Image (cartoon, rainbow, N blue to C red; front, side, top):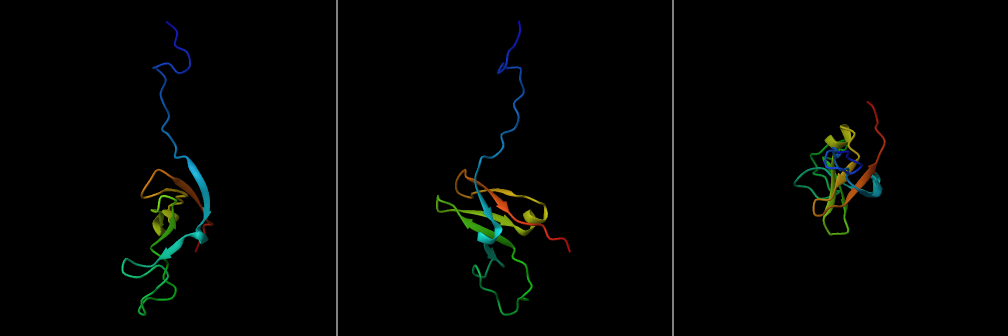
Length: 96
């Protein structure tokens, strides 16, 4: 018996997230630590300290989060922490 397209013997590829929006990293809010506010810094913090993570609001009232480690690992698609939405974060990698 011949199996045509869509037959049970065909291997399914893993689903990729459906990106609904492309957002510049500049539109994300930087966060410098767990105890400070969005743009606030402790007086002891060095002015050159990089943010630990960035957030962008989702339409579901939750947020998209991308960490500095994600950026270093070239991650560009992140999901909302409260729903199934995904965004592509647009940024340029700067080499030291």
